[in-house]
Amino acid sequence: MGRCRCLPLFGKATFCLISVLFFVVTALTASLIASNNYNTDPPTNGWILVGGLQSDSVTFRIRNPSSSSSASQRPQRFDVSTSSDQDEASKVYTGELTGDNLVESVDVTGLSSETRYYYWTSDQDGNILQRGQFMTPAPEGSRFNFTIAAGGCAWTGSKNDIFNHIAEEDPLLFLHLGDMHYEDINADDVEIRIDAIDKVLGSPSQANLFGKTSFVVQWDDHDWLGNDSSGYCPVEPEPCQGREAALESYRVGLPYYDPLPASVTQGNETVSIDASYHAFTIGTVRFIISDLRSGQSEESIYTDEQKAWLFSELASASEYDFVVWVTPSPWLGKAKEDESWFGFPDDRSELSDYIT
Image (cartoon, rainbow, N blue to C red; front, side):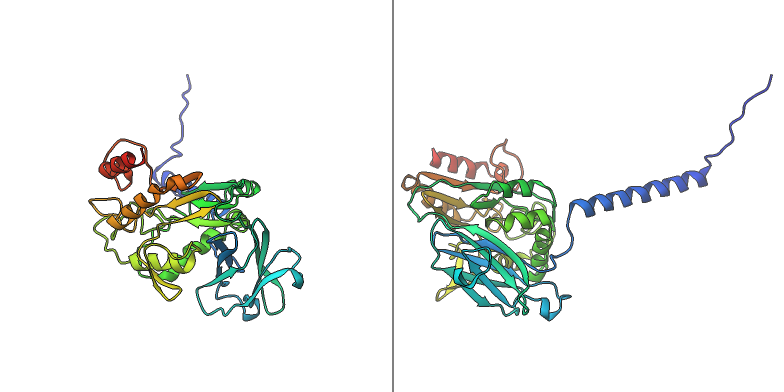
């Protein structure tokens, strides 16, 4: 009776070759998925963020295009108008852009309440480079209906369609709850931190959302100094070399309600900040934004100054119809060693008792 014999096709060399091919295919697939779902390049024409929104004023941060752009492609002018058609009669602001700074700051005042405004940058030939829109709220103390959206922890440059869905809701404000990116930057370099914002706003879906609303942002660990970073230093043994650059990048690169409580001013200008907590009012709603990273220590989740400020804000809650407190760190959960509220049960209990 004959016997069947299998040839030894899978020797060591063949197995190694198949293993290598498997890893190559896996790496290429991962790279393709990443390129399809996450942006890594700065937007060609720069970006614009709107913040510090009030019924009669707003502030902008305007990022110049990448250095690879020619001088003719750089924004030369910035306009704000009540019309999307860019007609001269409807303009409420026109200003020249110098292009000398990483990010240019523009404050526009004298706006009308409950009015939709359009803005754009244009080059020396009049070509539109970036454009967007926002809506002003009713005057402070006036009741009116409005929509806010909130979210956080989006991987760097995420192109997820959820941002487009949020934009369709036409929110007056978008509250970013932290981890705007996951670059984990602990370097004494403001430009690197602005580059991280470039990657975020190079995402078409995020650019679409932030171009249709006003922006309020507070950092968490990854967009502060790195994973689990806290207070004046991230997780040991890394030195805290990036703290001042992080604070400066918030002041330079992101629009906010000025002046921040922990800011240093000269005249009417903020020249530096020591923390990014702040509060503001839209209509009859008070928004309180806590910074639970820059001042955190082993003993407390925030500094004594920020705690006193927070308690003072909460003590005035009866003056508003609603108070919205934004805490980038998770609140609910059992006490454990952690850099969020879990790791500071005494602070959490004290604040809970004060609120109740």
